[in-house]
Image (cartoon, rainbow, N blue to C red; front, side, top):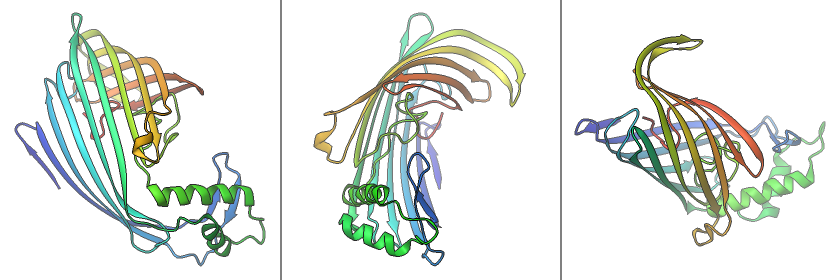
Length: 283
């Protein structure tokens, strides 16, 4: 369900999603096999209900130069069959402010916060989690990797205890790191970006998969910092930062094509995508 009011200044979304998944095997982040599950393992059925409030008080939908844009997400997650996993809900708030700068460029300020609240706890005992996983895995042809299995059990116990808020890393936040790089029960993010506007034009183009009318070309320079923690009181005790630049092309149809390269503690990460970072619903 999607409702819009006041010339799309205020939008309300309601989404219901139901599905199921089955684990075939567990692997670590390097792709090394931890263990394989039996084919008789029951599928996990789950439902997700989302409610979204989106407020846009900017001067332009695709390329805002001044004003404020904000959205609030509330996701309710229920595991219907696997009661070893926790149920809960996640609340996200995202606010972006746009300030005119120099002749026709823009300074963008962004704040994001995500909190997970566990409503029903699953298993939080690591030994019990490992015992159940050994029983469900087929370790005949491939021996279960006990060291990696223990790490997975620890991560599962922590997630069941605190839940999992929105992660940091990837194209939307902390772009110097891979998607989902940092996660925990709570996350917080803040950033600013200077968008140097090079052109204001209406030029048709047809390049590979992109065919449209170019209206603006911009060079962005950004600085981002974020933190994750299992307890909200521990946020900002540790943080990661990301700096970078790129190129941004705004089209007459409203699409935004963007290439960025972010630099952080783990090196450089390039990203190419459509639409704009920090904007959960899109522009």
